[in-house]
Amino acid sequence: ECCLSLFHKEILHHLQNIVDFGKHVMKQFFGENYVHHGEIIQLPLDFVRQLCLKIQPERPESRCDKDMDTLSGYAMCLPNLTRLQTYRFVEHRPILCIEIKPKCGFIPFSSRVSQEIKHKVCRYCMHQHLKVANGKWKRPSKYCPLDLFSGNKQRMHFALKSLLQEAQNNLKIFKNGELIYGCKDDQDCVSDWNELACHLKPFFFPSNGLVSGPHCTRTIVKELIHVITMTLLSSTDACRAGDMKTVPISQGRSYCEASAFNKELVRNGKHKLESSGLPRDCLLYKTLQAQMLDMLDIEGLYPLYSRVEQYLEEFPEERSTLQIDGPYNEAFYEKLLDLSTEDDGTVAFALTKVQQYRIAMTAKDCSIMIALSPCLQDECSEQRPVVLTSKSRFTFSVSVLDLDLKPYESIPHQYKLDGKIVNYYLKNVQAKDDPVMSNLFKENEDCTLVLHKV
Ligand SMILES: O=P(O)(O)O[C@@H]1[C@@H](OP(=O)(O)O)[C@H](OP(=O)(O)O)[C@H](O)[C@H](OP(=O)(O)O)[C@H]1OP(=O)(O)O
Ligand SMILES: Nc1ncnc2c1ncn2[C@@H]1O[C@H](COP(=O)(O)OP(=O)(O)OP(=O)(O)O)[C@@H](O)[C@H]1O
Image (tube, rainbow, N blue to C red):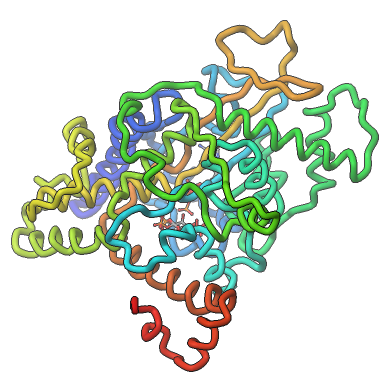
């Protein structure tokens, strides 16, 4: 009984940490209205067990190494983010929801980066090749996060169109809370634009004035991309960390050499990629700022992580004073605001960078939920944000999902994965694009030989 109550306490503590992290940290970075920290509730064990059985067949296979907790009876209660979040009451009108997992939207600017390619090609685009080689996805995606985060409408349209072509785990569309587009599990990706257009037609062309066929499908998809772009660029909230400037965006490269959009421009003889920049109050901007708390890149961070590790080996009891696993309170948040990159050799400096990196990792893996509901002109009051399309208008809300702080322990994994992604790219992709490099690789099976700077 004693063990059981200890277990209950630990679960409760863990859940409390998740709630506090949303409340005291992520709300400050993203803004009050974008973050829903949820609350802890207790459920009858019988209900939890039945729920577990019911959802098990629906879960993607690759996620099934994680078990649902059916013993404590504690659970996190979150609002259904596929619905509008502007009002507390549930609205019973038709609703569309677009979920986007945008991933990392900047190229590392840190001088600790050892491979030049990391300053040219973004992690997502490099990772695509490894994922296809490993069989995670059948085809590579043309989506590049730098296009989505550029704030340039043309580039954003291209990014969203690419997501609609290969949704992978980066895009899902729900109608009235039900998944109508995207990957249900690892194998089953629905990407039938005609079917999608049938679902969307009543939303975008309510009076049915459009004939069907490929032209109609293209028009509807265009309208969808337009509303997503507009809502992503909208400013619906301000936040405390709003004035915090992690790094001027101009410091890093604003485009990725591997982006299909960029390659197309180069092919057409245009070399200058425009990045219009994001409005400061939009969720994409805030996500990017939080991601940029990774200022040293994993290569610069890893030695600092080792410094903290070494200290903890000597003084394990200090783990709680250092607030490695919480509590995520005001004091924790305040420490994150120190953006200096001047290493004074202390554990305190290393720890701040480690914690900032964990926030950045979280922001690189979160999802954006856009809920849209059609409204008539006279219904749209001034408090509600509205987006217009050619034949309809929508009220909308934008939220962010999956803001659990990434564990301290995952840093060594990040370090190894980074090496794998870059080496795979250099050996199998870049080398093939470059005949000189390609021949070098043929001669030298061990790629590390050629990777060192000459
Ligand atoms: O490292 P990445 O970029 O592959 O991100 C992982 C995600 O893969 P992705 O590249 O988005 O397909 C991965 O997504 P999937 O489960 O593959 O859909 C997870 O989100 C993983 O987070 P966690 O370890 O479950 O907390 C993510 O791991 P973290 O790096 O966020 O720990
Ligand atoms: N509050 C919510 N409202 C609507 N949909 C949600 C909500 N939370 C999660 N989802 C949906 O469920 C998916 C999985 O969510 P999430 O990644 O948070 O689950 P998880 O608990 O991490 O799952 P796992 O058991 O695989 O770790 C999301 O991508 C989203 O589509």
